[in-house]
Amino acid sequence: MEHTKTNISKYFSIFALLILIGVTDILQAQSKEYTNPLILQRADPWVYLHSDGYYYFTASVPEFDRLELRRAKTIEGLADAEPKVIWRKHETGPQGSHIWAPEIHYIDGKWYIHYAAGGAEDVWAIRMYVVENDSENPMEGEWVEKGQVKTKWETFSLDATSFEHEGTRYLVWAQHPPEMEGNTALYIAEMENAWTIKQPQVEITRPEFDWEIQLYRVNEGAAVIKRNGKIFMTYSASGTDHNYAVGLLTADQDADLLDPDSWKKSEEPVFKTSEENGIYGPGHNSFTTTPDGETDLFIYHARSYKEIDGDPLNDPNRHTRVQVLKWNEDGTPDFGVPRPDNAPTDPEKRD
Image (cartoon, rainbow, N blue to C red; front, side):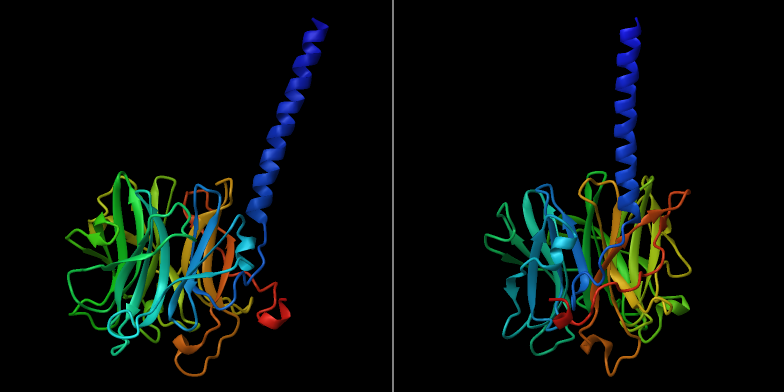
């Protein structure tokens, strides 16, 4: 009997130790301070953790002329991973300029990148496009153009993101409606396939609050994370200088996502410039997790200075950054504030 008690005590101690180790690992991940900036001069960052254990990263490059892709087994490893050019802009016609905001998705066994592009002759004729790769490894194989994502209007449109919910795949994007004063509102529609939407397309937010209309009247750059019985959709607003900030739309997981009334909008930005920490114009984010899936990560771009000469779009120093996304007791996301830089922003000093 005494021997049995000893064994039980031993196994209980081992079990308690394993639980303690697991909890400690989670707490360490949640309090981890990542090296920022993570990747220099990469705006509109998109990170996707695939079932093969790799993080895939794509973003807007300063030249706005190509699609790049890199991968690594860790978030930190993306910083030094070799980028591969998988597509270049056309010399003439559509898709000839302003190659913006690519996102990589794995849908029905194939890889897709959604991106925006302007025309070679009309750089502001910006529309949404898709390329496809059926290789198991998207760093290999051939990327094939699937064409333009057609919407209700032939107007300025960009920043497409895709997510699945309850067996239905949706596309969310920014577009200029013909009657609107300003730049873009956000729309949602069901998808027929990775490059085709179904109608109707439904507007779920347009710029209305003061923080959304600085320099430009913009809602753009949506990203979705599903947690705690809710669908949380971040978006970015205003011009791409220090006024750029992140807002939040929230819907119940059982709601009709094509009903505009299902989406509740934050009146204030949930993530914005931190003068104290010297981080300006954070936005156009994506979400991922640590490799074990236990900790959510918030990937975004921002600058390390406030004043910009000329059009902010011509300033290349929107750097990719990452920090832990925490959660409030009521189940809502706590974005916190942009953390200060803890790595050089000069490429020559990072080698």
